Image (cartoon, rainbow, N blue to C red):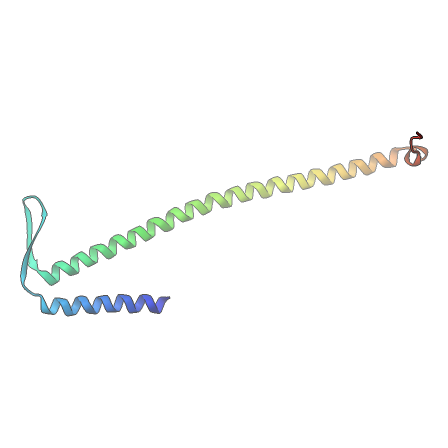
Amino acid sequence: MRILNFVVIFASGLALVLFSIENTKLVTIQILPGYEVQAPLAIELILAMGIGASLAWLYSIWSRLARQIATFGQKRELKKKEKEVENLSQDLENYKVQLEEQQKRLPQGEENSQPES
């Protein structure tokens, strides 16, 4: 996948450089009403591409941060459930011990006796 990314980035960069060499004519860009910039087309395209790449990078950081926050919440919930399972397991063990103690305290005759019908 890295090779594919490299090829795409290299090809687009090479295309931008070749396009820039051929297009050195001054052009005017209106950024806001009443505010215009005049520069070679190549420079304006390179700036636009740089701004776009920067925005894409910021978006990737934002989405990674959002994913980490979601993962953190899921991990916290998982730890909470694991603790609950551990407590329930301990309770089960305690109940088993109590049951064994109660069975030991029963007289021998009651253990084996069955109600007759």
